[in-house]
Amino acid sequence: MSALAACHAAALASYGWCTLDAALDPDLVVALKSDLEQRFAETPLCQGAFYGEHTKRFGSLLTRSPVAEQLVMHPLVLELAEKVLSPWCDRIALNLTQAIEIHPGALPQLPHRDQDMWQGPKGSIEYLVNVMWPLTTYTPENGGTRLWSGSHLNQDVATFSENDALVPSVGPGDALVFLGSTLHGGGGNVSKLPRRGIVVSYCLGWLKPFELQWLVYPPQVARTFSPELAALVGYAQHRPNLGNVEGQCPSILLRDDVPDFLPAIDALRPDQTEAADLFVRSQMGEMG
Ligand SMILES: O=C(O)CCC(=O)C(=O)O
Ligand SMILES: [Fe+2]
Image 1: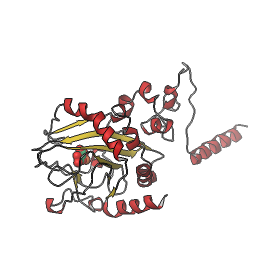
Image 2: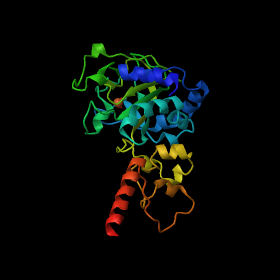
Image 3: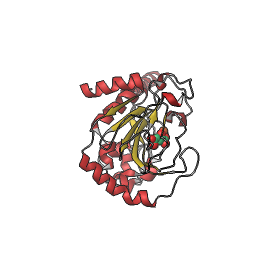
Image 4: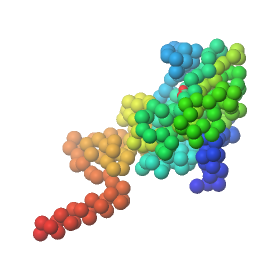
């Protein structure tokens, strides 16, 4: 792991969040903003108390701007996500890409931990790494993401005082990284202008993702992705044998010709291959 990533990983472990300053070329942010402008304008306001009725959200960002790939595949971000999540999975997966616009008049969002969408044990496993890429400068007035530093170490505490929340100062080109176990929420917007940002999150490769990646990037779309990006959105098996098509890696669907009849082929970890082979050999020994 690079020294830079190790430093950020240590901050994530201690505080549950960290910022990456100037992680993206400003020209790319300009291009990204312009690619998304029309969609922000035409997307209706959200409904429901969690999303917030003065906010707009839309997903599938890899189909909405070529710059989105640079966010999703950002090397330092991927290094951090893998460092945090790899103890509990064979590979990580893209959980969502979502653009969020918080309008003037929006109330603060319910403080929450994103990992609570999965009903497994909490405190012993890290499920998700979140990356917020601001498109406008975030402030406590305009709805900048508020979070509770250290809250990842206190899973039993459902919520903390608003007075203890902090709003990291991040702007276009920076990234705010926080764990799925860190309590956070969008801020209320008492300014006159909307706050815009993009969330990219990564989860354990065996979880059901928040945004159904195979549906938003069906094979005809994923075929245009690099093999690494296609694997991250789900065109890869999670060993052993999870997430297959006809017992094969789902990336088979990205080929020009997909044979009608396919053999199921094991995709096991080396330790599992060894155990299965050993067992087969012992059975053959018994038979003859
Ligand atoms: O918009 C934000 O700052 C955070 C949004 C958020 O945490 C969520 O919708 O889960
Ligand atoms: Fe959240």
